Image (cartoon, rainbow, N blue to C red; front, side):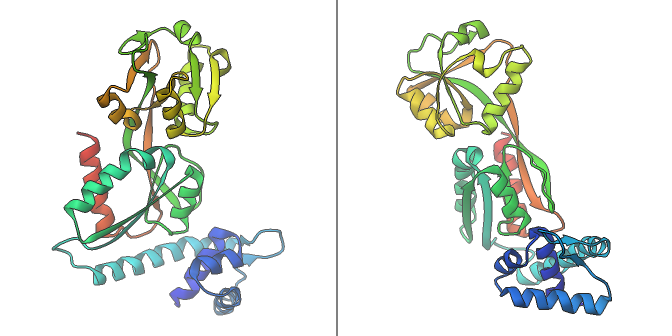
Length: 298
């Protein structure tokens, strides 16, 4: 069976669009349409329902999609095995996407250490919002994704990667510095929040909810996007914020920020690894995952 036809079919199913599938595959839309028509003619079945606003697989198309993914994964694995040595120095490219939390703090350092240890590897990290990263993995634009929250998405699988501790960051010399304070004491402090939808904010909302407290019960003065914005505001003395500990480690070491804890709150989140389901893992990707897990659990 022509795997190019199967690849075109899978791309249309995943993108729900002939034009977007063509863009993903780097070919013209008529070429994709021809591949699908040829496949349907060969199998004697209609594989795609084109009657609605979006392209949907028929029942036969859904069965073919599952089998085609396995076949394409086997082809990719074979090509990977033929294209790289089973032993010896690592070479190749590691394309990885990450959401703004881990992508702005933990990953750059770990990727730098990994590349220094394996100079034959070229690392390409793209940072965007969680949903976009997951879609990149589903479209196989990047091999791995690292995100702070899971979202429903066809064609990807999630697995735990590492734990991210969330702390209360306060300015240097603040009365909370190095202490454990009550929620009532926190109510009296000006709060800097990350934007709605940010992973850290979701974690804090969940922890507060256990104690019958909502964010609007606090003295929220500023909502400033993501971690770097909130960090800058606290450094400037405009309030305190909940943030990933990894995002402020250098500030704490330099003495420009301090950490506090809130009694009854134990905020942390699972940072998740995203892979394309059925995709054969490259040797470089597996080496990085093993390397990162060893570093992040030390």
